[in-house]
Length: 156
Image 1 (cartoon, one colour):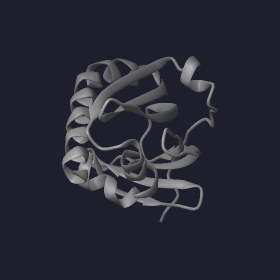
Image 2: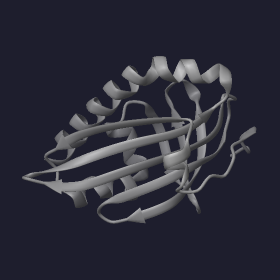
Image 3: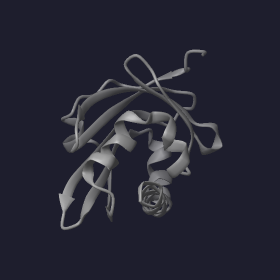
């Protein structure tokens, strides 16, 4: 596969607390934490079955290659894969400008008869992209909730 044109700044876990834009979404799902973690961290190709925004995903040596709706692509490095509670990856390159750095964290915690799933997106957007991200937040929230519902149905 061709190398992606836009390299992003390599950030560490501290970026979760220092990113200029941080979006956090959460939902309860009936599936147990181990099942949710497996879908997130171990079944990379399966993302396209439950997360509509993901059209294609495959594991790579260091992480993942992901293609989103509309053709946006990312090469990612997995930083943390701690079963069953935490999965963190950094975007290293993309095929479109607009993001200077990005890190995503998924947390899965057991709750009474279900799992609580939290998705955090930490971004350093280019100035022209910052306003667009704010407008996109409700769409991302809805996409996340629908994805969690589909993941639940898939695992029941």
